[in-house]
Amino acid sequence: MIVCVCNNISDREIRQAVELGLTSMEELRRDLGVATCCGQCFSCAEEILSEHLAATAEIQETVLKRPVFSN
Picture 1: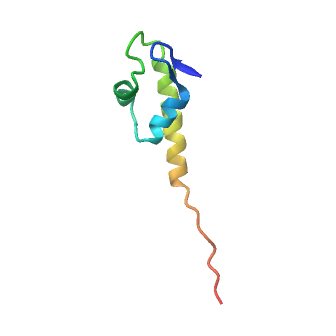
Picture 2: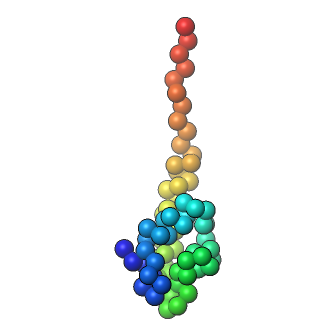
Picture 3: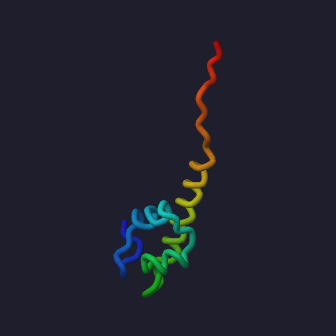
């Protein structure tokens, strides 16, 4: 879905930017140009950013452990 019509930025690009380390709207503005023209996409972009940051934090907190087998 296109989030920023002015700069043709999709939700997928915002999620990818988060995976590459962006963590704020200021960084999205600087690196992708989100919300730099008309500003109508700001709230949608911020919501996608927040949701994906929360999802990636949850994944990072999950620790997979192998069972320990003893002889």
